[in-house]
Amino acid sequence: MPTRPSSAEPVRLSIRSTSAFPNTALDAILRRRQIDTVLFTGVATNVTVECTARDAVNLGYNVILVSDACAAATDEAHDATLVTFSLLGKVTSARDIQRALQRHETGQDAALTGSPALA
Image (cartoon, rainbow, N blue to C red; front, side):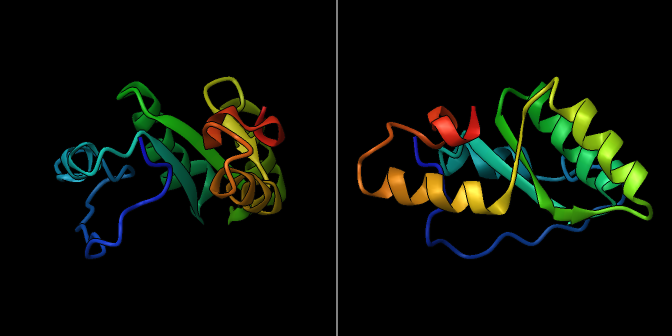
């Protein structure tokens, strides 16, 4: 299974809730593209990012929350989400993601989610 999206057209969704999954085609799009690992970044770490990431976990995706590519209204809210989410999925930095992808692309790791940098 690929760990990065294909070169297909970008996905644009109209989201009317705190998660990108309900009432959208996101799950179907990811499955059709055989994407099993999803990295999360964005604004409102403790709201939209967390809700969408939790839904992805519940749908069976490997989920990685990129800690330094998210933000919340307060550092406390951001940090609390990172601690809580680490019980459900992986939390790591953008630099660790970059290193893991470089190793994956050179055949040094079987999969992004199996990378020691992300363990």
